[in-house]
Length: 434
Image (cartoon, rainbow, N blue to C red):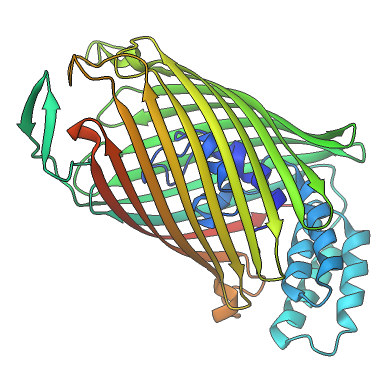
């Protein structure tokens, strides 16, 4: 039932900035820039669906869905999606108006009518509450054919010499997590969020992705001068089985500007501070302690009721304690094509990244300054379980997500010249607690 819409990006984006708070971060390190550049990519967003809405910016979500219901008045899925959000934020007046309008429709499918009546009954039984409490659960797995980014020639450069690579390529990882969130309105145009999250990851063969993470998010969603603003602060901690514990903090701001009925522009800035816990067994953990800055700009366009597109641009700068091999600048551009079919949602995306490093890494090569180019293609399909088994998921709040990703990395060093394919299967479920 849930259709990925433009303004939802700011619900998802700021929650998923850190690997530490990411339930599926074992697949790859998903950065702030990557999420904002692919706002309609459900492969990224639904892996963290247990944290949707945690930024508390439901106002943008509601305004977008209300605009779409006027643009596509016959689309039942959009109206049901809008109803689910209105119920979550305790807006019974708007919800009941939509319910009464939909009950008059003669073309309403039996399963849609059943979901509508359940929502109506839930509204009748609910008492008004200042805070909205919710729990989000997700679990799933990923398989990759090149977990260690082994070069295509199985060779690498090491201290100015070319040597062989014996690292494993094939592996799988299982992940799961739970998040608890509390949101409350502040006036008519603002809302405040508090979120606590815990996740766990277990890698099948190796132990690099065996960890537990804990996260705290504070966020405000508001409007200033007609522009949406979503400032936030996030703190996280990750306990790795085979590496030092890591700590991260991030603050930033995001927003969007609607232009007409079909276009919107998004923007964002983030500051991050990541640290490793140096100790007797990890004496170099703090060498990669990093300060980062990210800037993003995106455009979303609704072409038809089914087809939408997205374009993103990004720039980030990373400065570490030890510059060699750790300081770099990244330039990104991404393109997305999305299909909201009645039977499923399909998103196809392609992202290109250029990484320019600032200082030679002598452990690899003292004569070359690393420069990378990556091309990431992905395709994702998502479906509400309730569309297949209505008795199991009558409210269509349990989702299954299937995705495939192909990453091609080309570099001026053998170590970073590789191809990796990944396949993932995940489920997510949201529960209202009050």
